[in-house]
Image (cartoon, rainbow, N blue to C red; front, side, top):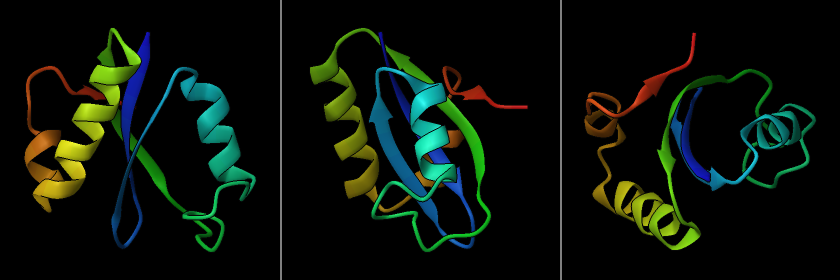
Length: 81
């Protein structure tokens, strides 16, 4: 199982992983290039995807769209509380 997740600070960030808890921890510990300069962000939520190839495809689709907000409003987006 894979996850395509969305983070929010003054911008949005979209990524994919097979272990969402580990990946969020890596972001919090500044172990990722993109978020290492960000002090505070929030996990907005995620999509659950069956295969790695489908997760990569969805992540690319979201990033290329330039409108991440549209994907947050989709029915299958799981909101993190």
